[in-house]
Figure: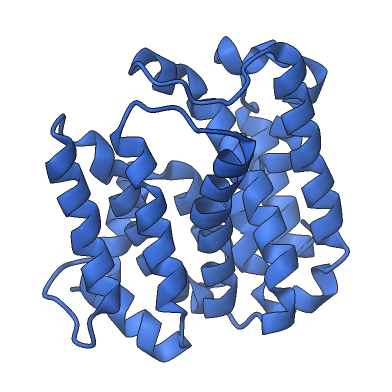
Amino acid sequence: MSLAACADLVERGDADRFAAVMAAPQGLRARLWPLYAFNLEIARAPWVTQQPMIAEMRLQWWRDVVAEAAPRAHEVAGPLHELIREAGLDVAVLDRMAAARVWDVYADPFQDQVEFDLYLEETSGGLMWLAARACGAPDQAEQAVRAYGWAAGLANYFRAVPGLEERGRRPLVDGRPGAVRDLAARGLEKIRGARAGRHLVGKAAPALLSGWQAEALLRQVLADPMVVAEGRMGLSEFQRRGRLLWQAMTAHW
């Protein structure tokens, strides 16, 4: 049970968040590795087996981990439990993150836009809020952080659309170009709204580095919604590194 194991897991399975943590002050990294490792574990749980019951059991295992008073002997569960205790994290948010991933187990589409929005809220929004909370963000910052997390989650979800379709899923409620453009516009609006509460986040700003590509990616979709279906989203390596460095140095997001 070590932070090194969590960091290694994130490095191998979530390159963007690994880069974001490495750009954060060293003193805050220990607060981020367990959360991002947990997120990776629940995100991949629905895809490691073709048997829905086993996938749900894996997710339930993680829900049990965050609910229990004593830590389990596991490379992620142990550090996560210690972080929950030290940072006073809301285990209900962690539980909803895992519960939301049940949607990924099955091929059923989202019933409506409300259900899709809630999926992003509970997964990406919840994760970013917990990361910010672990880094010292006050309660008053939750709305802004969650809005930024939702937008970042949307950008990442857009990038996953071609892969989800290859797996036989219908990832978007409405995949027509106009609807995709409107959804990207909503994400950009959430970023603008989140920035109104930037001053509330304070020293916890490094916890929001994981969303450093969100605005640029959503602007790509706004300009040409076909980049989603055709899998053409993405920034150059120069843009990626430059944007991350700028956000890390300025704390502007």
